[in-house]
Image (tube, one colour):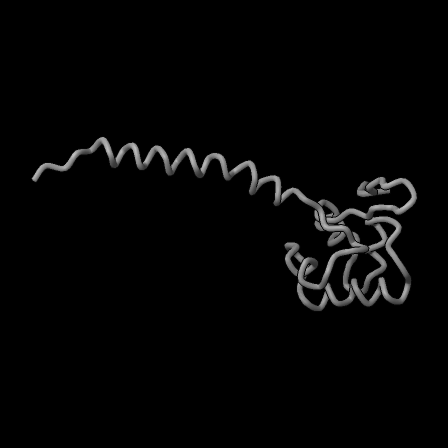
Length: 107
């Protein structure tokens, strides 16, 4: 019984092309920012560098002080200092209700 290499290489090519099309999508999803004012506990925990305790502190802070007005306000959350804020700033945004603009830059 002879095996043909062609179907295997065609299958391998098809798999590689399929994966190549998925990379931009997964990269785009990874680049999406979580809105601090609408993110759930699970969404906050999914951000690298945020554990359960910090995610809960963010939600508690928002409940006590109202909506975030900027990403930089995260520094006021217990356990988030300047260094940690710099690491997290790329993962979050704050969408203002007035203009629909997203605030993500450091002041």
